[in-house]
Structure formats: C-alpha cells, structure tokens
Length: 182
Image 1: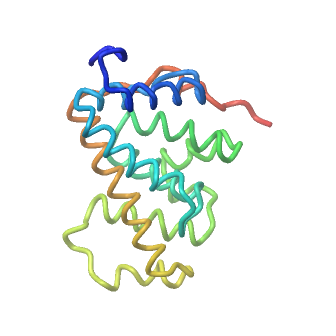
Image 2: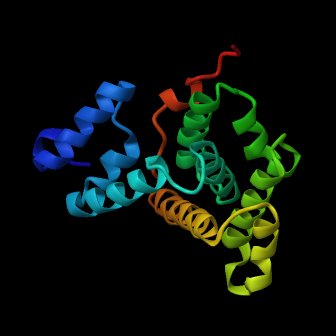
C-alpha cells in the first residue's frame, strides 16, 4: 500500500475525512488506493449508494451489506458493516443475528424480502426471473427501490470478492465498535 503522502490530494483529503469522522483510515481505502483513480471512482459510487437519500433506508442498506458479506464469507466487509449497523441502530445484537442466520433475525417483512432478494442475487443470480421480484413488490417496494437494493447487493458482491481474493483484513477497531447495550 502506498504511504498517504504519496497519494493524490483527493485521496489524501478523503483519508483526512475518515480520520476526522472515525479516528481511522479504513483498510479498504488504503488497499484501493494502490490505484488512486479506481479508488476515487469506486468510493464515489459506494458513498452515494450507501449514504445518499434513496429508496431504501440506511438501515436496510447496511443490513443487505451484512447479509451479503456473511454469505460471501468476507471478513472485511462483515466486520466493518456490522460496526456501521451497530452504530446506526444502537443494536449490538442485530448484526450478529444477521451474520449468523438472517432468517432468524427479528426484522420486518419488508426487510426480510430485501434480504432474501440480496441472498438470491448473491447465490443464484443466473437463475433469477421476473417472478423473483414479486415478494419485494408484495412487501411494498417500488421498482426503483428494487433496483437500488440490487445495486447495494451487487456493490457488496464486487467488494467482497476483491477483499477475499486479495486478502484484505479489517481494521481491528471494527470488532469492538458500538457493542455496548444502551
């Protein structure tokens, strides 16, 4: 990984924002910064997809991230997005339940439909058909929300594969973040 001072200003600025917000530079950013232009483009899409106002709530997007990462056995994304979901919800149990067996987690019917869809995309996308979208529509999701859910699941399938194949390790801090019961 390049040293931060060797990176373009735009990447250094992002690293500074990470440090200010969380006190650390995520290892995914350090690893992706090997190709700075790739990092900036990936992060722009990731940040927009996960943090902008959209059809899905931040909770729903992070839940998809955790469940897809669990199915892909991605240590990096599972650790980091479990921490983000704990922070977002104040619930230290939900990410653990989703990672262990999302089908047993206490979630709404809408969330269950989203998670079932994300897992199906992860494990069986070549066999999916139009009828596979019906549970989402019955749960009240619009076509726009379904498309957003598909993009979130796809983002994590991509990033999980990069992290797994290249041996990216999560920052140790993620494992302890936001675990206290309120």
